[in-house]
Length: 344
Image (cartoon, rainbow, N blue to C red; front, side, top):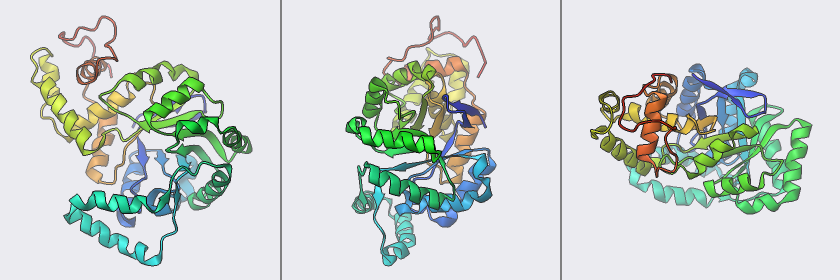
């Protein structure tokens, strides 16, 4: 496992984080604990959760799992989406719903709509902040969290001076080490424009095909900010598009035979290595946080981070050939030449 320093925070963590969004929601208790154990045993030390994940139960399971290992991990959670208290019969039906979706995945969109109705989004107030953090600390069984994100925040939150000041006070009090924002790329761009003092960490969905925000993040990497990418694979549509683009590249006579051989066959391992390392290599992003409830996905991602077959030069070429070209190759790099270095 590779590790990285998080900006100027003094924190150090694995560059592969474990996203807890599916825990106690799409994945039940047994499956979640199995994935957590595998991740921790493999050296993953960053765990990302939220008050709303798992209908409000994800934090509790994570806190239970970590137990006496709290000092060995970096914890982030989020506030701003409030989970409604579930009635007992809804909790009892969750295992049946999971079983139903395993045989009827097409019903997943309908279930998502039903689930979304059970949350109150954009509850970004000082009152919710206090109540949410206290509940998070209780469930996580800790006296502090390393990073607290505003969850799915709009750009308008940057004008809420009372909220930003409250976050700074919580940092001073030691309840959180770093305050941040989890939002869409356009909101992150607005944060980079305004640079509010309270927000030192940013989490956003990374798009492997669009290098515009990545270029801005890379240029801000020296400022001591923390950048984390979630949803790196972009769902089934993103995976399909990446496979198609890599397939076209692998068939191109303009790349070296060595790179063509590395790209074939276009399987789960190749895609994981490309996607995760493109997110981390020369971008300013310190941690990438996929959801890894399936053990085969977890193992593929761990291998992708620990033993990437692609050199820095090859990744630069892949980035250039699969994105919008706004993130250019390093100066002097020949698109058709054999790579001059094997350094990862």
